[in-house]
Length: 304
Ligand code: GRE
Ligand code: ZN
Image 1 (cartoon, rainbow, N blue to C red):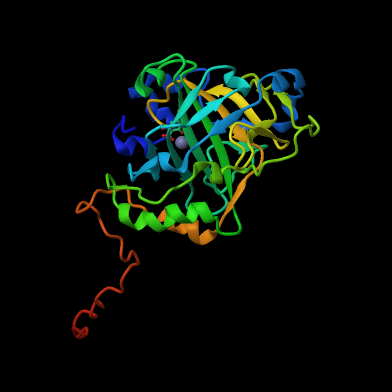
Image 2: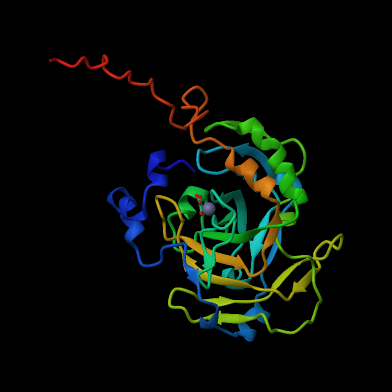
């Protein structure tokens, strides 16, 4: 959602506070996850495993808002529930990605001080309690964001469908309809798992702003409503939007496992422009040029 002057997004959070007082709040994101400050919490996790459902047909539009790519969904048939969300049912509103100018940075959250090359955000809103996304975005339990870290490695097949469409939204405010199915669940770092596996990944965060982390359950391929357990877990805490207006409305759920994307795919992301069509300042070259040589002033004639 475009809620602010664009240049503000590139400025420092300390600047955001002038226009968005929320940015000075007590549950601001992102945070560094200190993995030695989490502890196990098996019971809560067993009672409410996290589960989700995303029909590939829900991905409707690809947008360049000027600071990332974003896919808007129609929410139809999407669902996120359980885990820290308990019995509330959330719908997928949009998903978007953050990255950096080099492969060694780009994620918003860090893990024990380490940044990743990027971070994918699947943004959901609480349909059990609120009527619209906008209403939910103002409420402390209104939004839930699944976060996935991106590491450089093999090209990612589903991400490639997105990368291939990005040249059509190269400029800010460009938007296209998506006609081929793009399945956001294929962007998650979870491939089924073993039902009844150990609870070793179930953890409660004791970092002051974090709650607990645990196991993940997803539907078995082709098995309708049957869910499978994945052992790899996530970290969760109560936080905020990471860009203005920085609403403190997000339950963050960050997968411990990352996905791989290629350096080339990240470079396609980096080619997106912050400027609308026609308003760009092309940066074809930026090197200095050799100046006209100053001719030595007329050969000094020695005055005698
Ligand atoms: C963002 O703009 O980066 C964003 C949202 C909603 C939730 C989280 C988030 O728009 O990072
Ligand atoms: Zn984001």
